[in-house]
Length: 376
Image (tube, rainbow, N blue to C red):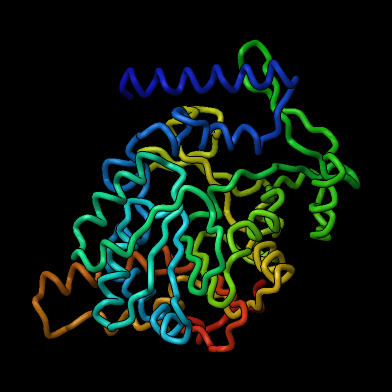
């Protein structure tokens, strides 16, 4: 760890301690928000290397172009049936998905009117701009970085890969007949956990899940998720919303085997379960309760079109057609290795799920022949 990275972490920890001292205690959601997004200091704000071999993890678009090319096959019919359609991507990583999907859509002669990116990290925005600059000019000029959520109505596709898992979560525990909220205080300059009653608004959100949990069961939920999803999608008039992330439907998410929750941290390609170490220097994520996401989207007027595993989604989107067994061996071997990472149950194929929802859009969405809506 470099001295500059340690200094960033120390400064962030001091900020968090100040916040605790000013408030008496803070929720885990507030801690996670500061650890990830505190301006200039948080994990996604401080300019540290995050993606790739030199970073902390590798996402599906960074493995190669197969992931994006499959999505292009899904996106193309949607774009073709809408007027002036745009693609709106949240949290675009290194920009690889944007780069590859535009090339694939161009080959299909089905480009969007524009490609919008909303990115909270100034460092990642810069990386995305470098990646997009490698595109042919007629593609690069379609990409626009937004400083705020769309302010005008649009048709098209809202897309997010590994976005929901990075939203701050509230942590709770079943104690008797109540679900208590995790709070963090400062005890002898160390973070200390305690459990208190939820405020009414959050208690109602949690009660709406109608969960029956055993004593001591610990889990998480994204607070005010419906409001967040509304802010993201409120200007979408007609089109598709597609989320890709690791998670489960509610029955599996709240299964007794997961009674310690799903929080996981990533640093230098190693996972750990201690969010209170290396603050600001490691990613903090939580598995996604896709039932909660689907219910929120339904309440906003969306129709749930599909929920399946990443492996099944990519298979139905035609990933096998992107490999040429008669082609050059090294290229075929590389693509086959990439496909295995994306699709095998022991890799990303089962861990990652895909949820599709549509608004004022009747057309079936490719990718869900093996729909697993029953798991929601």
